[in-house]
Image 1 (cartoon, rainbow, N blue to C red):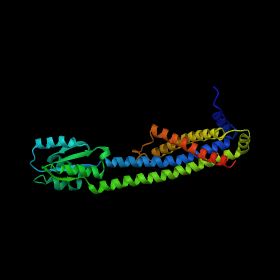
Image 2: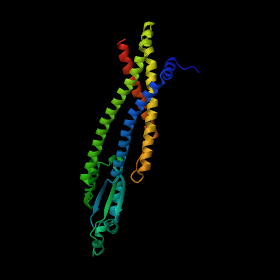
Image 3: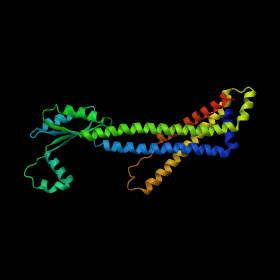
Image 4: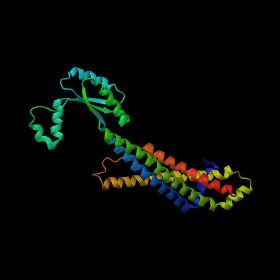
Length: 291
């Protein structure tokens, strides 16, 4: 099967200058590796935030003497809230047993009680997309409308801090990610620029015999794309090796770490291809304007 001319010319460049091509792929790979490391840290940080967010819940304390039928009917109504994932009823006896098992420092105090001071409650877990201060506040306000609810708590302060932390992480991630991407594009552009300058005489001859800018540009764009793909694969391999080494050497603290999924790895390689094309386009275009 005969390859298209631009692709054949791009592959011929790898054979002509294997060392320069290898250095170019390595430069791209290490640039993308830097981005990949940051993305991996961001991925695990967001995973940690999601784990913490699972603890976001709204607790409605029930007035003593409330009939069980009333609480059951209200639980069904609360379960129908769009923000609610699960509703659990905790009786007074269950609340006391939980306090005795979890609050060890007060174990003796709870043992000598003549009457149970803890009220029954409804514990409401929120859906993942509603685990923020605004949604928790909205659910709390609706719960306060039930006549048998004495008080509602959802840890407003720490939920608001969690929201701020998520917003800050998103902004910082975007800024640093863009900065690394720009650095990668510059490095790719420089490596392609070296190749362009090396073939400057050939390009000038092609211009003299009537070759169009598109005809001259296509092999370089394909070369940049191929180098971007290879660099992306190299970066993914280095990220996996570093992740495996860290996970094995720090098994006690790395049990909850996660690696990129197949879709994320594919997106990384596509990103490498895109910046390879962009770097090539910038370098070749600049050279052609001055020829």
